[in-house]
Length: 227
Image 1 (cartoon, rainbow, N blue to C red):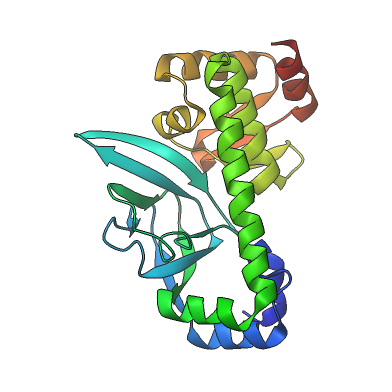
Image 2 (image 1 turned 90 degrees about the vertical axis):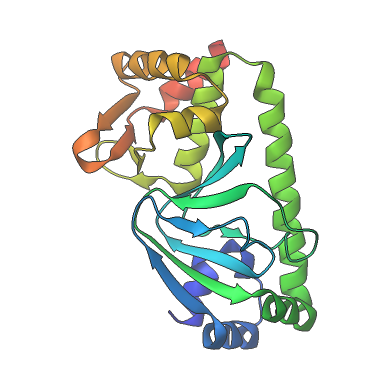
């Protein structure tokens, strides 16, 4: 990767100085994972910051023998920055949902970058606040119907990570339980809603290629307004 590629791929580095990006490329480590591998263990938090170059991951909580998917992330996202600034979180790990390529930078070197580049520091604060706002919006959805929650989740994934194709917006076919957890709906409600979306020609499932196609975003947005 060159500095232009990394600044275009990662919103975190949109405003970073070219010198910062040159230094970053000289110190990062590249890692690759196959589907269903542990990318970050609970003991890894606080040691490094991780930048997703390609692929999809889930952030999973495991507590009292129960597991739940808290977040779905993909290309351009980064993880671990908050844990190097505060106490590391527990019982949280990151698992690959597809082939994954990421870059990692040690906590010490990431902090050095922030101190050297005020623009990068400011940008990270902006993105952290944005994440908190997104969390608030998800909490506001808690009292909404399962159908509304799932529509909003699919639209978010399409907007953030979707690829435009002739069939519609393509995203990964995330395992049912993981997507249900992320949308905060039961597995039964999830499956009923997915069937409804397919019958309404808003969604196409391509299990052979592990893809979901949002075939009619306008209709999904229209359904959300009606609920």
